[in-house]
Image (cartoon, rainbow, N blue to C red; front, side, top):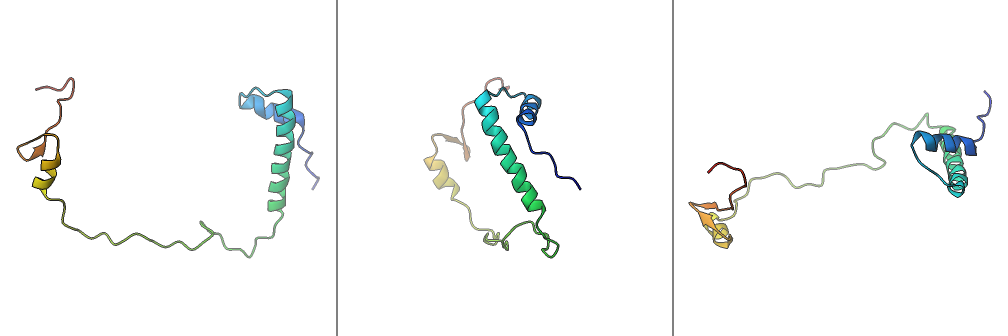
Length: 102
């Protein structure tokens, strides 16, 4: 299998055009170097022997840290309505919504 050709300035310019990005000459040089390093690193990772490593969705064991969902008494209705700006017939009274029928 032949070695892939190194990533060049023209490749980065092509990708930038596909992404509809306008890059300056300095940005092209900078991104060429950065993207080449990313591609090299991906090659290093692809070369690793991971045959004996089981597939995982998370690197650490995951456990549920939530409390059990148990019903508890709610707030006292009269106490809550007493703290509201306005109430009517045991409910919060809110301003009428524009366009809503009376």
